[in-house]
Length: 132
Ligand SMILES: [Zn+2]
Ligand SMILES: [Zn+2]
Image (cartoon, rainbow, N blue to C red; front, top):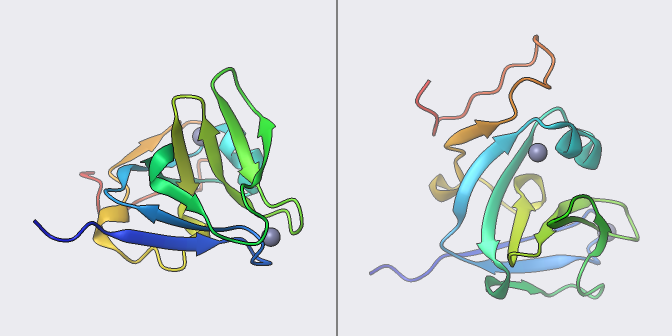
């Protein structure tokens, strides 16, 4: 078996940094209104890890959170405001691919798109991982 993969990333200012230990689970894109407001982007690209597989390594420690639903909190850097991801009660940590140092890895390729309908009709989302 290949050695487990590691992923690193962080916010704009560098206060929040993470090391996530693979496997990366459920890579997907989402265009729901919560993701749109959280990120400012029309579509967010996500990947999930068990909470125990994510270490917060930056000087800011664990990111700030805002309770966004009954089961999850949105995580962000309180210094620069960068969206980092979502910390679920489950416990799962979902990280936004835009904060990864490099998302150019096959295991991060989205295989599904959630909540397609809130996106504007002129906004097309496609990933190589998708069938259609
Ligand atoms: Zn920051
Ligand atoms: Zn969403």
